[in-house]
Image (cartoon, rainbow, N blue to C red; front, side, top):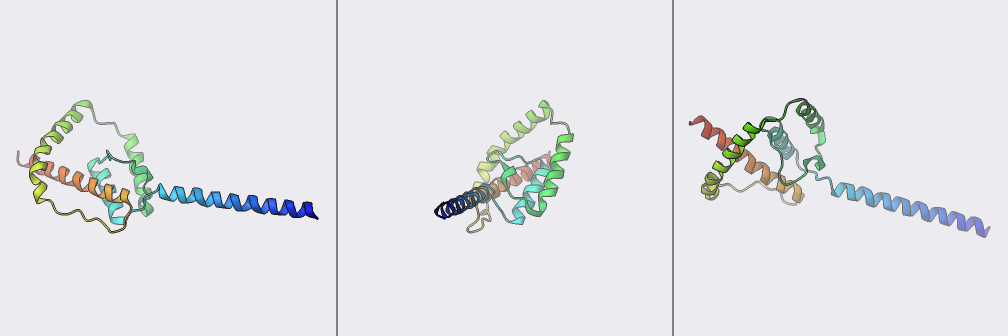
Length: 148
């Protein structure tokens, strides 16, 4: 009888430890997957799909895309099928980026505050700031190209 009680208690203890460690792993997975608001994820999709945005600061594949996940997957599949930008186009883009630096310094005083959300994940805040800068640079460059 004592042996049966020991076995039962041992199995119960193993079960509790297993469930606890599973819960811990799940919590770690959740911490590694930033969940942002749908507006930010929509802006990310537009930036990537329409303007070729690629984050220089973080791995965007870790972000929860929610109902937009399928759109991101389709976009990535299409990108795999397309050819990469050739070296000459990349050099032109880099030169345009360098020219934009002077304009950015002049515009710092005229910038509106970025619309951060209280209590949001730090990764979401960083992405929001990066997208804001990206869109500003992209649209300013497009305006400069039209005036030439």
